[in-house]
Length: 166
Image (cartoon, rainbow, N blue to C red):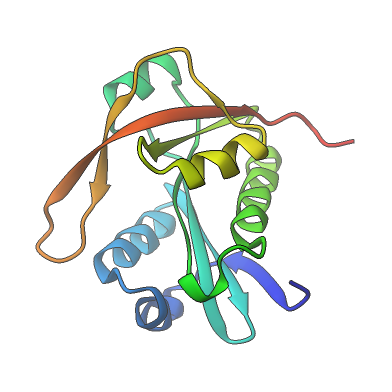
């Protein structure tokens, strides 16, 4: 993990992100939102190759339940690590960097939604201190690549307090 570098994505990164991770529409959307100060796309790099991403959603949630129960709470969105680099801590490092940046911005908690059958991701989040919220699962909107359709997933919502690290 010594050569892993995490930084905010730049517009010039678009083609290499798409080349390594696909999902042109997702990356175009998130870079545009980042440019409008609505969020932050963090990228994990090994050398000159992007191997993972996570998006910090800083605008109002799209899901009514999140708006009602977690107003003003940032959402970790679309954590992804290239298959060749999974299982070695890249996802953990991306989440830790996202949390660090959110603390610096003054947020005291963060939420995320994980598709209900994605038990591997849920275990990672639980290990990192995320807890299920006390409300039902939520219909979450995803940004599908290609023709622009929005997909719906049934998701667990998990929340973590962002207490200052001593």
